[in-house]
Image (cartoon, rainbow, N blue to C red; front, top):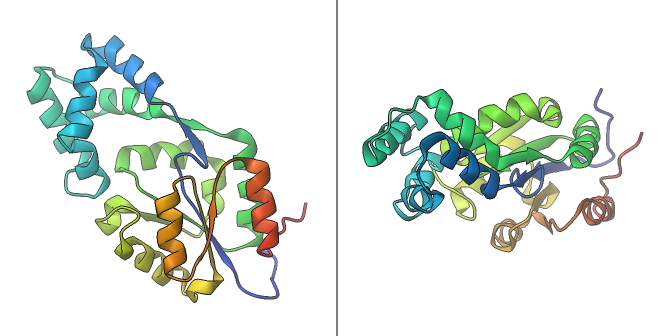
Length: 208
């Protein structure tokens, strides 16, 4: 049960680089085993041609990206096969997950992430801390990525609190800076002990 706090504070966590490790090397290896095509070509398709950004901003659905990928490489992959290698990118951080679960049971807690529907479905199943979050503010739903202002505005509306009552933890400095520019309390993630200290300095102290 969520305990009452003297002053309402909401905490927003980033996903990749905070709640999960990002292992593009594992994803690339899984792609090469599945397709027999070097990952350099996959990187060009996803990143240089903009398909990852299109999926992250909701401009393309995962089905549309798989269709484009099959056409580009002459493959016949299913969405399930795509998800199988794509989700290899995300490795849950167990100790962080346990701590964040405690935060989310004592403070209003939200996810604020640049992500796509495939990755979101995967972490929803594999990160138990997310079951305690009040809501997920996601780039593919909002239509823009951090550090663009509209996704922070959407987060503010979701929390229903003034910016000075919001805390945001992200591993990328531009994303933290964008939150701070709106009056949020921004913490740049480097490691779990530093995050715990930073949250405590802002009044987010977890009780066992």
